[in-house]
Image 1 (cartoon, one colour):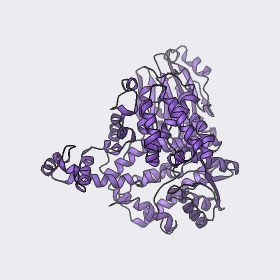
Image 2 (cartoon, one colour):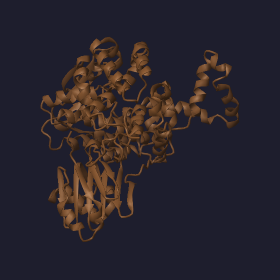
Image 3 (cartoon, helix red, strand yellow):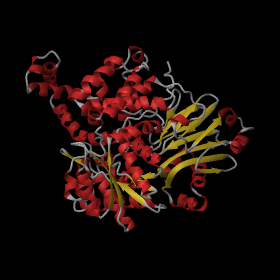
Length: 593
């Protein structure tokens, strides 16, 4: 796959005042947008938006890359506080003798890099960073099996790092240091009347849609039938004054198909509705290509239906699709938010009483063998786990036991505690008083930046179509951070404000439905479709020869676990299959020691 933004800088020349100006003139940066002056050059990808009118006027006069370079010359590393939107940028400055890399708030655009004493190389794709090693990082493979993706800053390639969302990297004579350029500050004391907040919210959503369609002759919308995608599709019709083109995916599998709700939304807003039913044959035809397209192993199973959705939109003449990602993570829509509130109640129990209760809930306790009391002891056991580790209490890999899944040699090369440290560091970045806002900020990293956005970005790029996220506009994000915490999670009611603000706009059936999205019935199909079953089995048995997973676990997973609980164990079969397909597509490079 080709990258959009890449470059390589000889740092020894940059540190040398005599040769640095010549370096700027000769830099071979690759980017859709480039600008250069006598001392620096700027390369960008995406569509940065300036917060200040004088910067916007500079964009109109000279283009976004030149405007960014001028802003850098005035503001240095404070540049990112003056811009928003979706972007990745690289600036090489001979006068300051530094290189500055940055990505937007949610890493809608990405940037990977490697650095040593002599060279800094970067690309928007991990597999395209100039001069990278083909050796794979075993810890990254473990992280993939744990999270079903590889959280930044690690990548699958040894020595290559990815900028986390809302971060920049400054490389100068003092070394390389990461900078968080967008602080996570929630205003939990802010109070506005509901009506004023509702009207402001609706306007911001509409403005976000209008900003995303600018310059595209035909824009469509993903439509799953949930509140987010239905809102975006409805607003798209309002902004354009035409019936919105909406695209939906269905599955012939009980409990997975949501086409009924997509049809309700389409009828309500008068959309031009296009439907496609993904089949097991589609999986067989596309899984290898979807796996290969990503720059590292990626296990979000919604990537494949999202790809088919984007493909039919592109064939229908759309140059861009609008996605509803962000509504849950800005306004409190994921079911785990309510569940964690239940667990937090335990911490209001007096400490002395907890000390008396907790020994009765250990593994050897007789209470664990009494029906009814077992559930109560389980509640105590889970409540005792501190956040954010509690969010992974039911992690699939850990439930299966890494020692039973992974080979002894592979286990000896990785750190089982690394994911926990990564989560704790991410959790610590947000100091909001309320549990709900801390969970939202946590999900901006793991759910949005590292999982859902790469899923949609990859699916649309494969289909040859652009994508926009109106619900992640800077203004709507800033607005969400000023809402009272109990407007996001009111007792146990998820996204209370979001739904109440759209009452009367969205159909009641959409407001009350349970969230599913484009969930894929892979496990169910893998037990019923012989060709798909064989494809998965071949992939897993091949993976077992690479020294990562144990052959006896693969045999047990396919023969016993998957047939007994296809919905649950199908996820493990999926992520292992996609790992093997990625390894094949990228030449099965060796895992480094």
